[in-house]
Length: 62
Image (tube, rainbow, N blue to C red):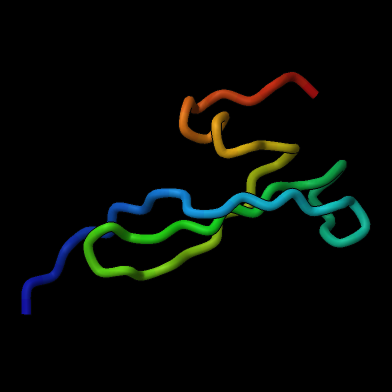
C-alpha cells in the first residue's frame, strides 16, 4: 500500500458562540477533507471567519 500526505481543503465553516467554547469571544470550526483519501479533520480558529476569508488566508479585524 502506498501512503500519502493528506492535503486538506475546507468543506464547511461554522462559527461557535462564546458560551459553547472556551477560546475567548468565539471560534470558528472548519471541517476539512483530504482530496486524496477522503479523510476528514476539524480545525478550530479563534474569532469569526467565513469561507472566502479562509480561501484568501485573511480575516477581518475584531
